[in-house]
Image (cartoon, rainbow, N blue to C red; front, side, top):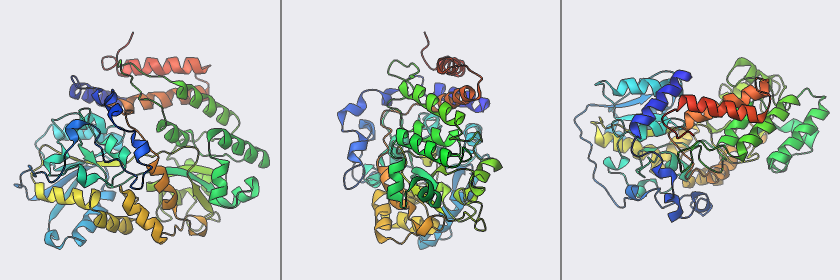
Amino acid sequence: MNKLKRTLALVATLALATTAFVGCGDDSSSSAPANNSSKTESKVDDSSTGDSSKTEGKAENKVPNTGSTLSILCWTGDDIKAMKDCFLANNSDVKDADITWVQCGTKGGDAAENYTQYFAGDEDVDLYIAEADWIMTFINDDAVSAPLSNLGLTDDDFKTNYDYIKQIGTDSKGVLKGTSWQSTPGGFAYRADLAKEYLGASTPTEMQEKVKDWDTFMESAKTISEKTEGKMNMTATIGGLWQVFSYNRAQAWVDKDNKLAIDDSCTKFMNMVKEMRDKNYVSGEDQWGDSWFALGANGDTFGYFVCSWCFGDDTSTFGKMQGGKDNENFGKWGFVKGPQEYAWGGSWLCLSPKADNGELAEKFVKFFCSNEETMKKYAEFKGEFVNSYNVMKSIVDAKTNKCALLADGQDQFATMIDVAAGINLDGKITPYDATIKNDYIDAVNGYVKGDTASVDDALKAFKTKVASDLPEQLTWE
């Protein structure tokens, strides 16, 4: 992880020496906040993030067509394989197209390091997939990223996409360089049978009232703890809580003076998590280990914070949390928004300056990220929550999605569509977020475990670590 932090910090410094934080200044004041516009009928913002990204009508595809293969850089072939199958099955004119992917590592963090090495060589790459935590380090470097307008794509092509997806894919000069086929809204998954027994909540609507904000969430955690004699956690991990908080800061991690911004939310989160851990409202397990999944399978936790890509069959992340289809607790779960709207992770398609298969790249991006008809086909093909309010609204309205992982076949999309519309990251994204957030959660865990004696000490440790990781990138007094 330290190697990743150093790599991201170095890439960000080289890429942003003259342009850093332009997108985090006052540009957003020229239009209504994205969160407000997302509450309209379309749930999207038709205005661009910056003037230089504002393009209307049909633009020219400037990418050459000298290559024979559409090469896509990624860290897992799971998504790309499904996308390739769906794309070729629904495009008879390119059914024999050569689409291949190059897998760089097995995790998003590994990919960030390996991408840098890959781009330094002469290997072919048309498109590449970037992760939310480190996409800024790449899209702010013109040597490894090109505007999507080079494919002939304009704002009109992405007008029904979620605002926060466009915000993350826009560089510091306001140029759209990344878009996504998915939105990854999250929520709180809980034991529906136990909600009725312990909290008197018989429906998801009633359960949402029990977790509608953090104070109410803590009250429900207390009730469950008392009724189980302290044996059951309200939620599985600190990491899950952090996913929610990290999307709901009031400001960016770096302020207009290029200084680390430590606000009240940093203190609030540390205090809340410490109390929850001390009272066993949250377990001490780390995410992704066998013991994390076992908490749900064994009935030791009341809930998990999960997102769209956690859902699937019994072998999916959420399916494993339930112990698989043969577990007695399988299918006894419900899903609600929880205390705050948030997303978890996500993947962005970015254009490489080396791209040499322009027509196919344009067609591929449009199929998954722009054309509502084909986006719906993929949503139904893979069970994906795609990056279009209109598409997901049509699926929810049809009432055809019955989730086998949830009690009574509850439609998780019906909850997620409202969550996604409420996410706003306008002015809150910096190229150093991955490093800073990792350092912060390390400080939180250190405080919870007793490595630091107080919140003040934990915050000092956090600031010291960021200063060590980003000594030249940020301004330090």
